[in-house]
Structure formats: structure tokens, C-alpha cells
Length: 133
Image (cartoon, rainbow, N blue to C red):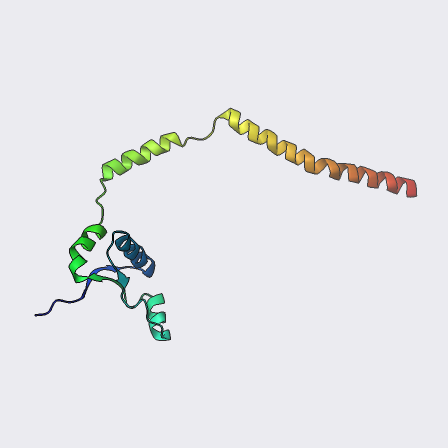
């Protein structure tokens, strides 16, 4: 029995995910490609865009085990993830009152900078209309 030249290592949910997996494999020295990626007719392109035919990531048969090891999902400990999220929440508290007052002062300066010329223009327009009347 003959050995296949290429083997299916994984089926991606989206074309973007397949391209990420191919990049990961290529970065580790394994030649990889998305099956059907080079199809150019309109029917095949439409099927790929609608993800109707799946995205098969192909590798050489002699690299199959190494590719599976690279693409094996990492196991995440839920308790460790929760601990990291809680630790991050503590470090990203809201700014203190002194920092907030500086921002408020800056906003007032901008408001005065915009409103002062408008007030002066309105006063000059009122004086002009009194002189004419």
C-alpha cells in the first residue's frame, strides 16, 4: 500500500483560522497549505467565502505528527485564569480624584478658549448695531 504525499492535519472553522495555523506550521519549518486555497474559479471562490467547503490544513505525511503537536490546543486552568483576571482588575482601578480634577480643569480651559471669542464677537456686534440705530 502506498503512503500519501499529503495528510490532513486539522480542519479550520474559518479561512482566517486556517491561515493562522498554516503560518504557525511554516514558522516551525513544516510546509503547510490550505486545501483549495489556489482555486480561482468563481464557484470555488464563493464557496470559500461562505465557508461551505471547510478549510483543510494540509501538511506532508512525514510531518503529520509534529504538525499535530504544534496545533494541539493548550489546556487552560480555569482557576489560574480567574486568578489572573482578578489580579488585573485590581491594577486597573479608576484614577484618583487629583488626576480627575486636572482633566476637568483642562476641559474648562478649552471651553473658555472657545467661548471667549464668541462672547467678544457678540458684544462687538451689539455695539455696532447700537451705533447704526
